[in-house]
Length: 295
Image 1 (tube, rainbow, N blue to C red):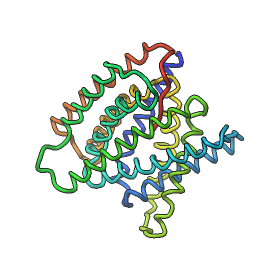
Image 2 (spheres, rainbow, N blue to C red):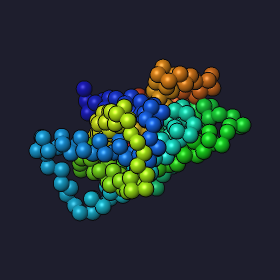
Image 3 (cartoon, helix red, strand yellow):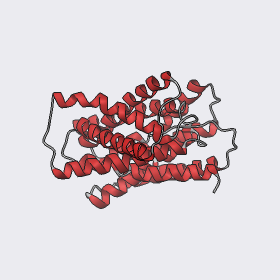
Protein backbone atom coordinates (compact mmCIF):
# COMPACT_ATOMS: atom_id res chain seq x y z
CA UNK A 1 0.00 0.00 0.00
CA UNK A 2 1.54 3.32 -1.07
CA UNK A 3 1.61 6.37 1.19
CA UNK A 4 -1.31 8.14 -0.53
CA UNK A 5 -3.59 5.12 -0.29
CA UNK A 6 -2.63 4.56 3.34
CA UNK A 7 -3.35 8.22 4.15
CA UNK A 8 -6.75 8.00 2.48
CA UNK A 9 -7.57 4.89 4.52
CA UNK A 10 -6.56 6.73 7.72
CA UNK A 11 -8.83 9.63 6.86
CA UNK A 12 -11.80 7.40 6.03
CA UNK A 13 -11.38 5.40 9.26
CA UNK A 14 -11.20 8.57 11.34
CA UNK A 15 -14.36 9.89 9.68
CA UNK A 16 -16.22 6.67 10.57
CA UNK A 17 -15.32 7.34 14.21
CA UNK A 18 -16.23 11.02 13.93
CA UNK A 19 -19.63 10.02 12.57
CA UNK A 20 -20.51 8.54 15.94
CA UNK A 21 -19.70 11.66 17.96
CA UNK A 22 -23.03 13.39 17.32
CA UNK A 23 -24.85 10.60 19.16
CA UNK A 24 -22.95 11.45 22.33
CA UNK A 25 -24.56 14.89 22.27
CA UNK A 26 -27.86 13.09 22.74
CA UNK A 27 -26.69 10.36 25.13
CA UNK A 28 -24.74 12.61 27.54
CA UNK A 29 -27.02 14.67 29.80
CA UNK A 30 -24.51 17.52 30.26
CA UNK A 31 -24.63 20.93 28.46
CA UNK A 32 -22.65 21.28 25.23
CA UNK A 33 -19.64 23.18 26.71
CA UNK A 34 -19.22 20.55 29.42
CA UNK A 35 -19.32 17.76 26.84
CA UNK A 36 -16.54 19.52 24.95
CA UNK A 37 -14.52 19.94 28.15
CA UNK A 38 -14.85 16.25 28.99
CA UNK A 39 -14.01 15.27 25.45
CA UNK A 40 -10.79 17.26 25.17
CA UNK A 41 -9.78 16.45 28.76
CA UNK A 42 -9.92 12.68 28.25
CA UNK A 43 -8.36 12.97 24.79
CA UNK A 44 -5.37 15.06 25.89
CA UNK A 45 -4.77 13.08 29.10
CA UNK A 46 -4.89 9.72 27.31
CA UNK A 47 -2.47 10.90 24.63
CA UNK A 48 -0.19 12.42 27.25
CA UNK A 49 -0.06 9.11 29.13
CA UNK A 50 0.63 7.29 25.87
CA UNK A 51 3.55 9.60 25.08
CA UNK A 52 4.88 9.18 28.61
CA UNK A 53 4.67 5.38 28.37
CA UNK A 54 6.43 5.39 25.00
CA UNK A 55 8.95 7.98 26.26
CA UNK A 56 8.21 10.04 23.19
CA UNK A 57 9.67 13.52 22.89
CA UNK A 58 6.78 15.85 22.01
CA UNK A 59 8.66 19.13 22.29
CA UNK A 60 8.09 21.48 19.38
CA UNK A 61 10.93 22.81 17.25
CA UNK A 62 10.06 26.50 17.61
CA UNK A 63 8.51 28.63 20.29
CA UNK A 64 6.16 30.17 17.74
CA UNK A 65 4.69 26.73 17.07
CA UNK A 66 3.41 26.52 20.66
CA UNK A 67 1.50 29.78 20.22
CA UNK A 68 0.19 28.76 16.81
CA UNK A 69 -1.09 25.39 18.02
CA UNK A 70 -2.68 27.06 21.03
CA UNK A 71 -4.55 29.38 18.67
CA UNK A 72 -5.82 26.42 16.67
CA UNK A 73 -6.82 24.75 19.95
CA UNK A 74 -9.03 27.77 20.71
CA UNK A 75 -10.70 27.42 17.32
CA UNK A 76 -11.14 23.70 18.02
CA UNK A 77 -12.97 24.48 21.28
CA UNK A 78 -15.31 26.84 19.42
CA UNK A 79 -15.91 24.28 16.68
CA UNK A 80 -16.93 21.44 18.99
CA UNK A 81 -19.02 23.69 21.23
CA UNK A 82 -20.95 24.94 18.21
CA UNK A 83 -21.35 21.37 16.92
CA UNK A 84 -22.83 20.03 20.17
CA UNK A 85 -25.09 23.06 20.55
CA UNK A 86 -26.39 22.28 17.07
CA UNK A 87 -27.05 18.65 17.98
CA UNK A 88 -28.66 19.54 21.32
CA UNK A 89 -30.98 22.16 19.81
CA UNK A 90 -31.95 20.26 16.67
CA UNK A 91 -31.04 16.74 15.58
CA UNK A 92 -27.94 14.68 14.90
CA UNK A 93 -28.71 14.95 11.18
CA UNK A 94 -28.80 18.76 11.24
CA UNK A 95 -25.60 18.93 13.28
CA UNK A 96 -23.55 16.69 11.02
CA UNK A 97 -25.02 17.91 7.74
CA UNK A 98 -24.51 21.61 8.38
CA UNK A 99 -20.93 20.71 9.28
CA UNK A 100 -20.72 19.11 5.83
CA UNK A 101 -20.73 22.61 4.30
CA UNK A 102 -17.11 22.82 5.44
CA UNK A 103 -15.57 22.02 2.00
CA UNK A 104 -17.25 25.10 0.54
CA UNK A 105 -15.32 27.39 2.88
CA UNK A 106 -12.06 25.46 2.49
CA UNK A 107 -12.29 25.49 -1.30
CA UNK A 108 -12.44 29.28 -1.49
CA UNK A 109 -10.21 30.12 1.49
CA UNK A 110 -7.38 27.69 0.72
CA UNK A 111 -6.05 29.57 -2.35
CA UNK A 112 -5.88 32.81 -0.34
CA UNK A 113 -4.20 31.17 2.65
CA UNK A 114 -1.55 29.41 0.57
CA UNK A 115 -1.46 31.31 -2.74
CA UNK A 116 -2.65 28.31 -4.68
CA UNK A 117 -4.68 28.19 -7.85
CA UNK A 118 -8.41 27.66 -7.41
CA UNK A 119 -9.20 24.40 -9.23
CA UNK A 120 -12.38 24.12 -11.21
CA UNK A 121 -12.87 20.50 -10.15
CA UNK A 122 -12.64 21.52 -6.49
CA UNK A 123 -15.23 24.26 -6.93
CA UNK A 124 -17.58 21.86 -8.71
CA UNK A 125 -17.20 19.21 -6.01
CA UNK A 126 -17.83 21.76 -3.25
CA UNK A 127 -21.01 23.08 -4.84
CA UNK A 128 -22.34 19.64 -5.68
CA UNK A 129 -21.84 18.66 -2.06
CA UNK A 130 -23.49 21.84 -0.84
CA UNK A 131 -26.47 20.95 -3.01
CA UNK A 132 -26.67 17.71 -1.06
CA UNK A 133 -26.57 19.67 2.20
CA UNK A 134 -29.43 21.88 1.03
CA UNK A 135 -31.55 18.82 0.41
CA UNK A 136 -31.36 17.75 4.03
CA UNK A 137 -31.94 21.15 5.65
CA UNK A 138 -35.58 21.38 6.77
CA UNK A 139 -37.86 23.56 4.70
CA UNK A 140 -39.36 26.82 6.01
CA UNK A 141 -41.49 26.49 9.10
CA UNK A 142 -38.84 25.01 11.35
CA UNK A 143 -39.10 26.00 15.01
CA UNK A 144 -36.69 28.41 16.75
CA UNK A 145 -34.61 25.59 18.23
CA UNK A 146 -34.20 23.97 14.82
CA UNK A 147 -33.18 27.30 13.29
CA UNK A 148 -30.71 27.97 16.10
CA UNK A 149 -29.34 24.45 15.63
CA UNK A 150 -28.70 25.14 11.95
CA UNK A 151 -27.00 28.46 12.73
CA UNK A 152 -24.71 26.85 15.33
CA UNK A 153 -24.00 24.09 12.82
CA UNK A 154 -22.79 26.64 10.29
CA UNK A 155 -20.62 28.32 12.95
CA UNK A 156 -19.06 24.91 13.55
CA UNK A 157 -18.55 24.46 9.81
CA UNK A 158 -16.76 27.81 9.33
CA UNK A 159 -14.58 27.36 12.42
CA UNK A 160 -13.59 23.87 11.25
CA UNK A 161 -12.59 25.24 7.85
CA UNK A 162 -10.35 27.84 9.50
CA UNK A 163 -8.88 25.24 11.86
CA UNK A 164 -8.10 22.83 9.06
CA UNK A 165 -6.31 25.45 6.99
CA UNK A 166 -4.23 26.58 9.96
CA UNK A 167 -3.30 22.98 10.69
CA UNK A 168 -1.71 22.58 7.28
CA UNK A 169 1.33 24.39 8.62
CA UNK A 170 2.06 21.61 11.13
CA UNK A 171 1.51 18.26 9.42
CA UNK A 172 4.76 18.36 7.46
CA UNK A 173 6.82 18.88 10.64
CA UNK A 174 4.99 16.96 13.37
CA UNK A 175 3.10 13.71 13.79
CA UNK A 176 -0.67 13.97 13.81
CA UNK A 177 -0.89 12.71 17.40
CA UNK A 178 1.47 15.46 18.60
CA UNK A 179 -0.55 18.17 16.86
CA UNK A 180 -3.78 16.74 18.27
CA UNK A 181 -2.31 16.56 21.78
CA UNK A 182 -1.36 20.23 21.91
CA UNK A 183 -4.57 21.46 20.34
CA UNK A 184 -6.85 19.37 22.54
CA UNK A 185 -4.81 20.21 25.62
CA UNK A 186 -5.21 23.92 24.86
CA UNK A 187 -8.93 23.47 24.29
CA UNK A 188 -9.22 21.71 27.68
CA UNK A 189 -7.44 24.55 29.48
CA UNK A 190 -9.62 27.15 27.77
CA UNK A 191 -12.84 25.29 28.62
CA UNK A 192 -11.88 24.54 32.23
CA UNK A 193 -13.08 27.90 33.69
CA UNK A 194 -16.71 27.01 32.90
CA UNK A 195 -16.63 24.77 35.98
CA UNK A 196 -16.30 27.88 38.15
CA UNK A 197 -19.69 29.08 36.88
CA UNK A 198 -21.62 25.86 36.35
CA UNK A 199 -21.02 22.37 37.73
CA UNK A 200 -23.85 20.14 36.55
CA UNK A 201 -24.20 16.64 38.01
CA UNK A 202 -22.58 13.96 35.85
CA UNK A 203 -23.77 10.38 36.23
CA UNK A 204 -21.51 7.33 36.00
CA UNK A 205 -22.85 6.77 32.48
CA UNK A 206 -21.97 10.35 31.52
CA UNK A 207 -18.39 9.83 32.73
CA UNK A 208 -18.08 6.54 30.81
CA UNK A 209 -19.43 8.08 27.61
CA UNK A 210 -17.11 11.09 27.97
CA UNK A 211 -14.13 8.72 28.33
CA UNK A 212 -15.05 6.82 25.14
CA UNK A 213 -15.73 10.08 23.33
CA UNK A 214 -12.40 11.56 24.40
CA UNK A 215 -10.05 8.58 24.08
CA UNK A 216 -11.39 6.71 21.04
CA UNK A 217 -13.56 9.10 19.05
CA UNK A 218 -11.28 12.10 19.63
CA UNK A 219 -7.71 11.15 20.55
CA UNK A 220 -7.41 8.18 18.18
CA UNK A 221 -9.64 9.57 15.43
CA UNK A 222 -8.14 13.08 15.46
CA UNK A 223 -4.60 11.67 15.27
CA UNK A 224 -5.54 9.43 12.35
CA UNK A 225 -7.13 12.31 10.47
CA UNK A 226 -4.21 14.67 10.87
CA UNK A 227 -1.69 11.93 10.01
CA UNK A 228 -3.63 11.17 6.84
CA UNK A 229 -3.15 14.75 5.67
CA UNK A 230 0.51 14.23 4.83
CA UNK A 231 -0.33 13.53 1.17
CA UNK A 232 -3.96 14.63 0.86
CA UNK A 233 -5.11 18.18 0.15
CA UNK A 234 -7.37 19.95 2.66
CA UNK A 235 -10.19 20.29 0.11
CA UNK A 236 -10.14 16.57 -0.65
CA UNK A 237 -10.04 15.75 3.05
CA UNK A 238 -13.01 18.04 3.57
CA UNK A 239 -15.02 16.19 0.97
CA UNK A 240 -14.18 12.86 2.62
CA UNK A 241 -15.03 14.34 6.03
CA UNK A 242 -18.54 15.02 4.75
CA UNK A 243 -19.13 11.28 5.02
CA UNK A 244 -19.40 11.98 8.73
CA UNK A 245 -22.93 13.13 8.01
CA UNK A 246 -23.82 9.83 6.35
CA UNK A 247 -22.40 7.77 9.21
CA UNK A 248 -23.99 10.07 11.77
CA UNK A 249 -27.46 9.83 10.24
CA UNK A 250 -27.20 6.05 9.90
CA UNK A 251 -26.11 5.59 13.51
CA UNK A 252 -28.83 7.95 14.77
CA UNK A 253 -31.47 5.98 12.87
CA UNK A 254 -30.24 2.65 14.25
CA UNK A 255 -29.58 3.67 17.85
CA UNK A 256 -32.04 6.46 18.75
CA UNK A 257 -34.71 6.18 16.08
CA UNK A 258 -34.01 9.47 14.27
CA UNK A 259 -34.87 8.20 10.81
CA UNK A 260 -33.97 10.39 7.83
CA UNK A 261 -36.56 11.71 5.41
CA UNK A 262 -36.42 11.06 1.67
CA UNK A 263 -34.82 14.50 1.21
CA UNK A 264 -32.14 13.63 3.74
CA UNK A 265 -31.50 10.31 2.02
CA UNK A 266 -31.18 12.08 -1.34
CA UNK A 267 -28.77 14.62 0.14
CA UNK A 268 -26.74 11.86 1.76
CA UNK A 269 -26.48 10.09 -1.59
CA UNK A 270 -25.14 13.27 -3.22
CA UNK A 271 -22.61 13.78 -0.43
CA UNK A 272 -21.49 10.15 -0.53
CA UNK A 273 -21.12 10.15 -4.31
CA UNK A 274 -19.12 13.37 -4.32
CA UNK A 275 -16.80 12.06 -1.62
CA UNK A 276 -16.25 8.83 -3.54
CA UNK A 277 -15.38 10.63 -6.77
CA UNK A 278 -13.09 13.08 -4.96
CA UNK A 279 -11.29 10.21 -3.22
CA UNK A 280 -10.65 8.45 -6.53
CA UNK A 281 -9.33 11.68 -8.01
CA UNK A 282 -7.09 12.28 -5.01
CA UNK A 283 -5.60 8.79 -5.26
CA UNK A 284 -4.37 9.66 -8.77
CA UNK A 285 -2.89 13.03 -7.88
CA UNK A 286 0.87 13.35 -8.11
CA UNK A 287 3.36 13.87 -5.32
CA UNK A 288 3.43 17.58 -6.09
CA UNK A 289 0.09 18.09 -4.26
CA UNK A 290 0.18 20.23 -1.17
CA UNK A 291 -0.42 18.77 2.26
CA UNK A 292 -3.61 19.08 4.31
CA UNK A 293 -5.17 19.13 7.79
CA UNK A 294 -7.34 17.43 10.49
CA UNK A 295 -10.40 17.54 12.74
